[in-house]
Image 1: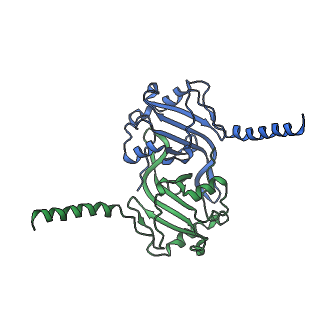
Image 2: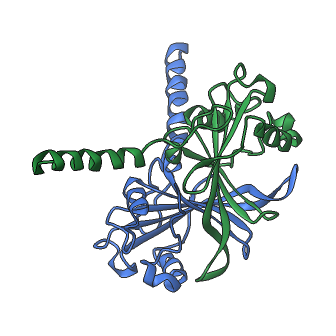
Image 3: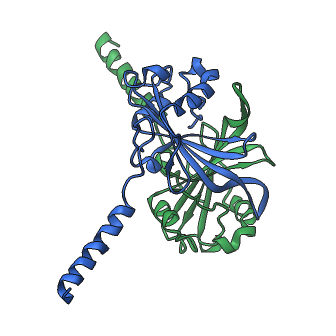
Length: 167
Length: 167
């Protein structure tokens, strides 16, 4: 191949690689897409699970934050999305009695859409694992695991998180 | 007084009361004003201090978030503001091995302005306590307590928080 067409071919390839690198992660097996921009959402509460040694921050989209701040979460309004960011427990070299985030475990989501997710309390569940954001679950039945675990808080619209008090 | 002017007087009073209620909290004794809008800032990391039984979320203003995500925190850039929101440990009735936020303790701030705060590592420290947001400290010397406690992380620009990894 002459030089110019070969360079053109190479430059097309060079343009495509970053596009693939920026592509959204695959959807969850139940069809839920990773909510865009969730890392920029505002805080509802932190938590620390000492059974599985993980630190968490629960964020909300604008609908959820408005509801959380107004105390309007029984039930959470349609369109609410809760994002739970989870890290393994780590220790702080300069403050040994503090637990701080170590490796990133996963981002979990609850999406309130009562019509679409009527079989799971009006919430769609999904999880993307690790820094590579790999969808959790081999098929759509993975939501039984999520919904089962949330049964103890059925009276709180299936949500464990109580919005943290703020001034 | 005739009825109409008296009603006017009452309605003026009724308008003034909510204005006072919405006034900003007093400045800290070192002159730092409570940064506006901090509850809407984005997350840098959670943490859990098991010595004094508190859960924390560390937020950053736009300058700090940009630096945290770029790994550009040695030193943190001028204009960075870190906000640490602190709650007493609480337990979750439906998940006893989880620690969740109970009462709000205080909001603490570190403001990077190397010229203004040259005596304390380039950082201005301030704290507002409780839901009433009462400034901490009886005079400007309270910063010695803050800066003293941050000495172990002098090599990390006096900041304990390492930005949590995110996808």
